[in-house]
Image (cartoon, rainbow, N blue to C red):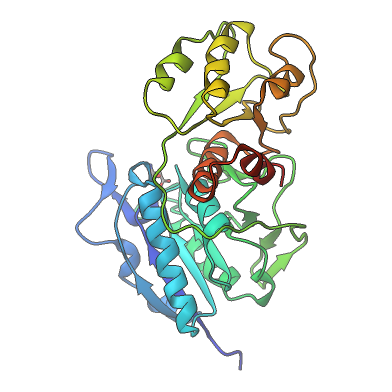
Length: 325
Ligand code: ASP
């Protein structure tokens, strides 16, 4: 007989715990459907259930992410948990998963999941994804792979996964790297292992970092306005391999002159922003000016990483070093 594992199940809200009403509006109800009818789930694991908040994921902030980290670490210290599953809205799921990947010191498998269809919609994927996630979190191979994201029979790393579609249930993809494994009817199969993992001890997130997107014809107006907001750092989703229009450079220079870190990611779906182009505003020029390239993260994750970096240091070389990982 296979012994059931002790799985910490943390519900945070999102479509997975919402229902559709008679007007077609999907919203949270008085009771979370995930906390009812857990008999089926209890047959696959011993569940310890926490529900620290019940929020649509556009309402989640680093404060809630930090709360999840503390809950996970508290259970980690008690030592009787084999794995954890977090249910979460899909809109910002990748951000919470990545934040926990960077900062959570618990050493059991942590899986984040959600659903594209609410609990009473035809083809609802919530319970299915939850069962898959409990199976992955119970799997010994899931340890030391970093925080995982499991939906639609696929296992992704928090660092690479992103939401790619507004409504399709195969929305979560890991552009250019692919998933780490799959969930089948019979088992959990890992076919890749991440080659590296970074972790930072953070107790508080209290800096101000903005994320903006470059576009053809971008100038310095928005950058100048942001500089007036007592900003601690900025992430720019730049063009292609990491280039900006020349009219944006005056604004950029103000950040550099004020020793405010500027992190460059690409607005492209896949690939890594690098110092390749030598023309005015090209990546090489930006690097010479003092910007930091992000080594493949998307904008929303680079923003979280910069918040974590700024919680540890204000030294530009140390922040750049973190982003070279
Ligand atoms: N808007 C919802 C949320 O993120 C979408 C979802 O859960 O899939 O809470």
